[in-house]
Image (cartoon, rainbow, N blue to C red):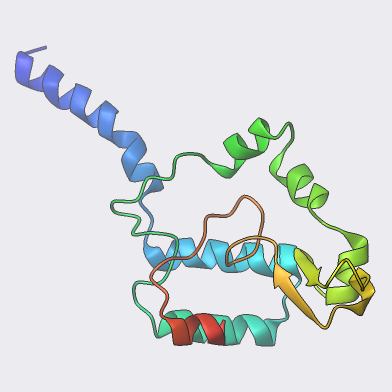
Amino acid sequence: MNRLARLALALGIALAPLGAHAQTLQQNNEVMFQQMQQWRGLSAATMGRIRAIFAGAPHMGQGNPAVTRHPMTPDEAAQRQGGSVDSVRRAYRNARFERICGHPYEVPLYDPATQTPEDATVCAFMFEYPNVPLVYPVTWVRADQAVAL
């Protein structure tokens, strides 16, 4: 094998993993939407509104897939926590808080000196949007889009 062919082969092998992860932003967003619906239990109507917001924001997502390299996959992050992606996501669920807030991965905000969680009138996400454990946060969001989401 001549030198140029060996170089081309080595370069192709080295760059192959990069291409495997470089889906389009829309494809990556669709995966995230499916995770949100599965793990947060969002309705089809809610998902339609979320998709419409994303459709009006061409850069909104979890990073430009052409250049973004996340430091860990969800599986690697779950292994660091001693479980699988599913087991870690289940472990973060709190039945009491879900009864209070009405959704998984939300926590009630209250004054522990004078109130109980059940007294809360507002809840907050446990994680950055899309509020699913082991899912990278959304970037390139304007303030008005964040409010709408």
